[in-house]
Length: 248
Image (cartoon, rainbow, N blue to C red; front, side, top):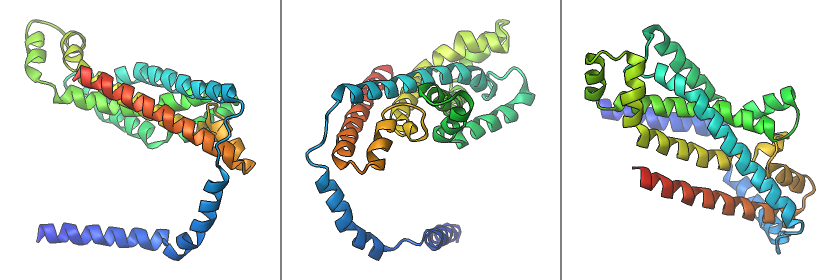
């Protein structure tokens, strides 16, 4: 009966989503020839000004990397407070976890839009947007790794007279380093993909070139930019996967 209820709830949810979204296969079918025409009009890709495109791509990688680094700095104390084994003040546990959920719940795109209004156009706003959103993600992943760690070494350090914070720094963080480092690399890889669109709100990176190409209906240029984005994200994915394999 419980399984049947879960299955019924699942299909009811799907039906409600279909009612809200109103997918229309006829509209999709009618739009496919127009889409095919745009793709055909993009050949051959326009790689003119390749140096400018590479500079924008490097800007994307830079803001994603700095944003991830700043996120790690912000996430460390939050993760320690959001994990019961390392939390020195139990009353902070639920408020900090709520803060991490809030940071994760607001996309880096939205944060970047806010920071563009605060600090102006450019990659600095994008970096801040990436940092705040990623701090929530890293804090969540790190705190779960800390809570899943073997409690015996931590208990031994506490029995030897170490405080909770000292034991976490000496025992718990080194013990979970492979998991936390792997999570950081995954978030960095994700941030490079996500940062490609931050230029749409003026937050720097190759997304700025993408927006210009779309606004001008320059499909050759658009295809060249998309090709570069795919190559960049594939390279980040392979590098991240290789480093994670070495860690675990």
